[in-house]
Image (cartoon, rainbow, N blue to C red; front, side, top):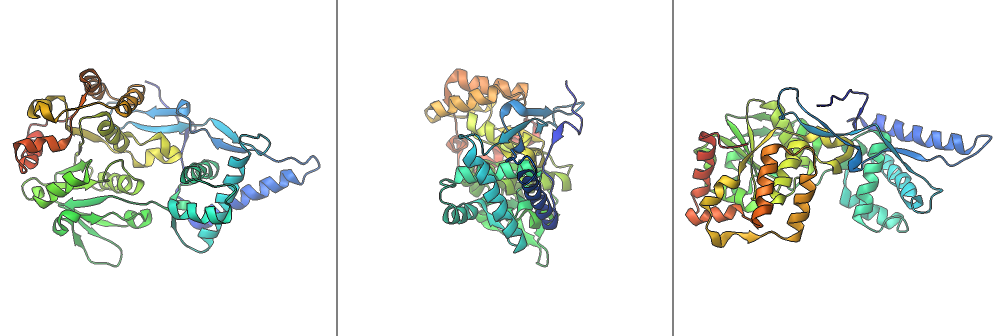
Length: 375
C-alpha cells in the first residue's frame, strides 16, 4: 500500500468571494507582468493534470472503507502559442472574467446558465456545454478553488424522504417523511446545504438509483417499518446530492449507507461514484466521497428474478465494465460481481423484483438489512 503526503495531494479550496477575486486578479497581474517585461512573452497556464494517469487512490489503514480518489501534483499546460490549445487558453480567461463579474454581483449561476451567457458574448470560443464544463474544471485547477467558490451553483435532481427532519436557515423544520412520493427537493446551493440543521432517528441511509423505485418506497412508507432515510439522484449522482449525502455521513457517522442499484455495470458505476468520488470532479473528487455498502441487486439476488426479466448486456454496458475493471479503486467483491455480469452477458433491473408483488421491495430491503447481507 502506498501512502501519500499532503504535499502530493491537490485539492480545491472552498473560499469566500473576496479571496477568489484576489486569486483571479493575481493571475491577471502575473500574465501582464510577463507580457510587459523587457523580454515579453505570453505565459502558459499551468493546470493540475486531470487525466486518469494522474489519478491516485487514498486508502484507509485498516479497511477499504475510507478510500477516495484524488489528483497528484502533476501539471499540464494551456498555451496560446499552440494551435490545438489556443482556444482552450482563451476560454479559461473568458470563464474567469465571467466568474469575477458574478462574484462582484454576489450572484450564483448554474453551468447551463453560464453556457448561454458565454455563447452570447463569446460565440467564437464556446459552442457546446461540454466546452464550458471542461473550462470550468480548468479554472478550478488553475485557481485551486471549488466550483461553488467561483459562483457556479450545482443543478440538483436529488430528493430525500423518510426519517429525516431538515431546517433551512430562517425557515421551519421540514419532516421528510411527510413529503409524499415527491420527497424533499435537494437545493443546488451548497452553502445552504452546508447550513441545514438535520435530525433523525433513522438507523440506515439507503441510496436508491432510480426515481421510480424511490417513489414506490416513499409511497409505501417503508420508513415506517424500517428506520431509514431514502435519497436518490435519479440516476448518475449530481454534486448537490453527493454533497448532502456526505454531509449526512458526517452528521450521523453511526448510520450505515447502502445503495440499491440495478445489477449492471452502470449501477455499479453509480455506487462507486458515491463511494469514491469521480475523476471527472478533478480537484473536488474527495470532497463528496462516502463509505457506501452495496445492498442490492447482487449476484445472490438473481434467484429471485424470473428468467424472462433478464436483458442482454449492451455494448455501452461492456464499455463501462471495462473501465471499472481497470480502476484500482474497485474492491475485490465488487470486481467479482462485475465479472459475473460480464460472464453471464446479462443485466437485471430492480423492477424485476415486482414479480413477487409491488410491496415486495420493502420486505427485500428489510431482510437484507437484518441479515447484514451487503458488501
